[in-house]
Length: 323
Image (cartoon, rainbow, N blue to C red; front, side, top):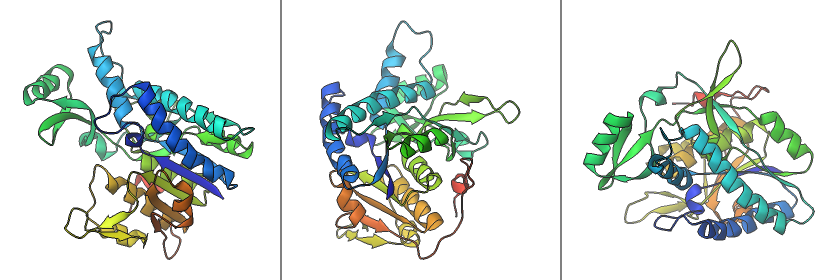
């Protein structure tokens, strides 16, 4: 089977932990053991990863660097996180899979410049701010900020992915037998000039689960795995008696009131892949990728019938999801 497996950035650097390299290497080691089990079982594997804590850390460092006239833009910082996390994953997987090539690929994700998300920034990034600091950043740097608990944080646009620029390269690597790490952090967000074809980075962050769903679809993957820090999707999350779901249809997932900043996008991505391919998606624990694929843990998402489709140049209607 061909599998796209998405792991969260928070799984590599958890809330409250120091963002030291050793801390992230420890978490990558654990994640790589789970992912290597898929390869050992005979599957083709493409790995995507989140980068929320990592890009937030780099953004804070860039903002505080007195050598810079202005901080580095988010698209460049996103590429840096792809290199950082990609090399950690590649090293660990290479050690666990002797004789198997592992390639980490800096990947760009094309977005629509007219996506409404550019007018409604919602993706939190960076550290917490006081109300006064937030107002100052809005004035001095043109930031948008929003409340995250007791404090304020910067928010940036999160447009939907429309195409994977390096899709052909990912296919070539897979066909050569490589394990591929691609589209980290949702991919470096870019727009394309319709006249010249040139791409330009944009100040945004693409949701990594939606990009993983698009990548899985365009690669004709047999399964999409979204690996996180919980064993199941729960109905009634936050209530006195949440119900773990072992299986679900896309329609069932879309009826759940799931947190927008965590499980919501994962459920959206799983539902979208399942309903538009007729194949399975699964949301499960990072430490048991193979069990999530086999359905012994996690929530397996399967649609009753296939709908939709993709063209072969890398574009798909994920950019305009069903309402």
